[in-house]
Image (cartoon, rainbow, N blue to C red; front, side):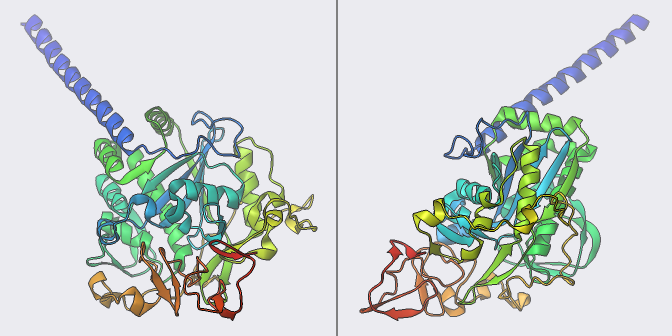
Length: 463
């Protein structure tokens, strides 16, 4: 009798082990399929700031891109994933020596150099013009640090990720009334700590009506940390196969399957800490009223050297950062001659680069959380004023409203100025031949000037 019970237990255990083995094998194959199907490498082998290829076995950086892509917008304007602007941009630096991840939120309106266009523009346009590579290069120019990998997530991905882990607990800072992911209805939330589902989480990280893009940037980082914490919990790990499906459907990235496995293993078996900051800066209004966010030079410089130290790279000199070197010439949509771009350097050393100077920013991450009630930064002010009556079906056309941030892939008007192709938010002519009248031309601010147009490049003003 005892022998019979023994063998019964052995058989049951074997069945359980076989079942677990089948599940693990299935999950392994699902993981491979999900990662492989979402793998989309860039057209560059490695960062020009790297002498050797980056490795996830060492410290590395990854640019997290959140795009304003959704199904209705893609179908309406016939756009692919690379054609959308980025609503969020976070540079994550994985410090393998300290088991730490440092997150830098870069506001979408940050005035930055776009390699693909050859002028300064909002950094969220870099993806629209050059895809992930364009965004990676603009961040490298801004901070003078290599961007080794990227991950791009669309709106639906935020919803599905949060839903796949069973929701997240989040402290909603104020009452919200935001469009849902397909712009077909509204999501309303009251202030306070609560459990959010996917649609509600998306509303929280999209809202910028009350506290501008800077407040939204803080919430985006907080949501990333909340999701990672939930995934690492036992409840989140039970949903790992659902998460893999979400990755396959809603993300694109430049990690190989082996690299993803290595990162997942490292994260699962180490106690990782997170440090985060938002790039400091001030409001910058162009002459025609277009809004930009001008990054604080000192914060850029400190962040650059902190990240380079983690990556075991030599420190930056101030003039290695283009926003510092050309700080006297930061004008949107102006072209520069070869001397200015390649050789010009200011004579004076910035005070924050002097020997012995101690920055109030510390390592760049010793910053207070953005408080919209105390901040002098206004942010963009032409956001929807009556959200209740502003669903997609009720909005006016771009021609009726002027420049429309959400319209892409078609000609746009802004106070009588026209740009063929993409709306640049600020009413500048991207091509000086557009709107040109006999005997004169429009400058980059939309002013009509009589006479021949000189000193211009083929696509805009030449500085």
